[in-house]
Length: 192
Image 1 (cartoon, rainbow, N blue to C red):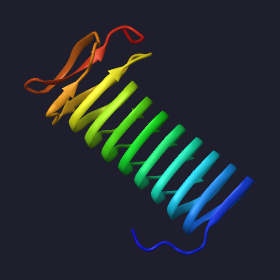
Image 2 (image 1 turned 90 degrees about the vertical axis):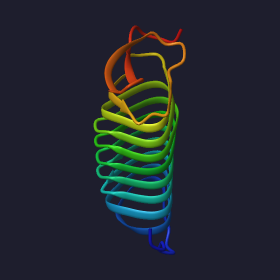
Image 3 (image 1 turned 135 degrees about the vertical axis):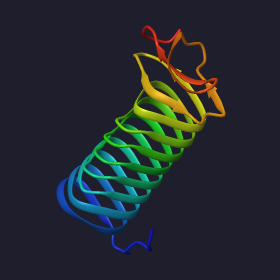
């Protein structure tokens, strides 16, 4: 990512803004941003509706955000709910809530609690999630640890896992990708 501009975008309350290149973007309240955003740090405390791509070194969400475009971030923390209508390219995703991606995810590390729903494929070095997982295509990671709780989860395929754990779950084989590496569909609801 190129050097960010020195100007900041700060919203307190409710506002409508255009996109642009910023150093820091901070939203405390409710904001609609029309256009692509590129920044060093994006923090949302409340609600944000972003009509364009987001590129940030750090993206922290405490509340709710809709992004109508792809997201690129070195670190993304979701403490609430995010809906990404595009591809997500992330270094580290920390999830404490719900993330829905209408596209695919590429990440180094995905960790968290809550619900992750991806319509495409999910590729990462390491995935450790507790809660609900829906992957429309392939979950491809070297390390996979899923603790599926509270509702049914589904993944079309899991591939590439050197280390795959699904502790204390009743599982049913769904598809075999490589010998000994398969994903199983959860039977029943809730954690044991």
